[in-house]
Length: 417
Image (cartoon, rainbow, N blue to C red; front, side):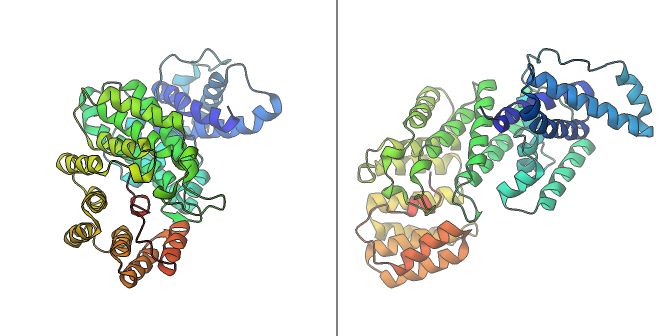
């Protein structure tokens, strides 16, 4: 394990211990970040400590004492904690504080962008600069999001406690959605020169594994982890060695990660018989059908269409609707898909969305309307800030027709699992 990976693994555990002891999320989070910076500088020179977690906790605790000593308004608190000398690093705590931290970062008073930034900072161990680079936003923007998030948590009087059953039920959808947002931004970056940001998708999978370990009876947690694994399994085949997008139907499936596919399918096989079907389980099931097909031509599209029908009943949404259009086109033909697309494109949530133009272009190509396809490809290229997607769509607009290719690219570029 690399030093960065080890520190990211230890960061939420150290933060959990400090918040549990001292109560101030904001002060403890700052102290842990300083301890992580110190570790990244000292450990390569002085050697890895015998007890890395204890070292981080001790270093962060000493930083807290220094801060409190420098603030006259907190002298009483200093006297209270002065008796609790951190001393030498002791054995690491047995409790894993990941779950309380994750639920605190996804407090309902926070906006989704703030939840993502705070989760990456507190649980991912990423610095403000690293988060800014990962999300392709200015560092000042990330700093403001994190600062406002801490202030709102403090103002809301939130406490670092094991979430109650009611809090789990209330916040779990936000927690899952936050992790999924982190993963999808890593899987297909919304902007920038790279199609993928592996550090984000890897971090989301790591956190989903921890959540699954602590909530084994939550079917949607298992569904989300399965969806991440089944989707990430295709990552080695999604780009050329030059970083260009490769559509799903053209993947070299021998490059797919068979272990991740097997793990994702096993999760679904375990959970589907007893769990109430939810959107992440259904999306994972769709991804599993793709991953288990020996080739694009052998994909079981009728099963995928049935899964989209179920998804639309359980949790309808614009991307579900668009995915179903792709499945309809594969089962009933591109003309049927276009007829469906004309209906759903009137949805305000899909109006002017570039992914609609991606699907339209592909289906027009398949019915032989090359001029219409070219126009739709160009509109789609103007609608995305991802440079690999832009280059891919512009190439489709300028290249020869692809009327013979079933499912050639609409699932991949339209964001279909």
